[in-house]
Image (tube, rainbow, N blue to C red; front, side):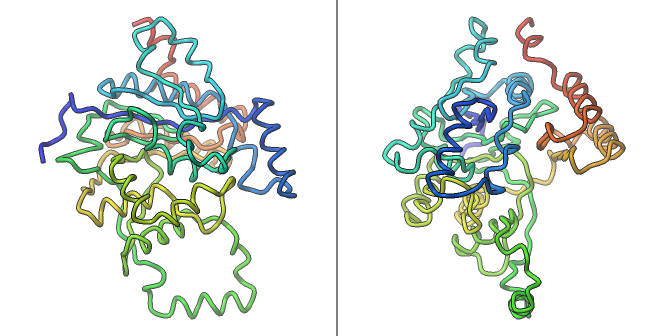
Length: 337
């Protein structure tokens, strides 16, 4: 296969929601009432909060990945304010909004969906989407110039992560787990574990001893791989998209698609181009300052993820937003160039 070159189409897809929208909030409350449920952790308000991250995300793609063909923003009957900002600019036709109803066509019984794992399982159904596309959460930004080869090379996706032993393959692990359950020590059995879900994905694809643990980074995907996943595992895929909220036994799409690529020799593992992950509600101000300082000095850090910034103190928020303004810049300033 030919190596990926600049003029080979690559799209970006971003999932976004404005939880402060009263229509969206009412839709979620109505769904919870219909199933007789109080608000679970999977419906926590922070999962749907919008603190303007989408502007930084899109700005970073336009600035540091200008070779992207189209940037799709997938949302639920909403329209981010940035669409008004770019109207009439050179970027107007490069950024498009796609509604959930489009990608869930034929599966309308699964709507409304408040489940990012269900929604991301269907991103490949965006009309006109390029064969090669990169999946972003709206709290991701690119902080340095990147090339197509950082995501796709020789017709393969470029994966970041490392191989780990499957829990089920570790001698004595299942016995230990059973004993913990019997003694009531497993108090978090309903907790949705990102690592545990990735292991389920590896086992579904056919891995017996190891799984590829993915960090929280943008993920390069191939549309044809998703088409094959839906053909090969229809029951698992249908189960994934039917869950209106996250459930513990779902397949995490990042893990599923990555293991499919690995199993079918459609992936290369690359250790460079690392991610800086900020959790400002959990990390101290000093820790955040050190991470930001490190990101400035370490040329290998090209991605940043800021999770639930709205839960942090005003001082932490200001520190992070000031850094983003310097490192990424504001969309309005990019439009003036």
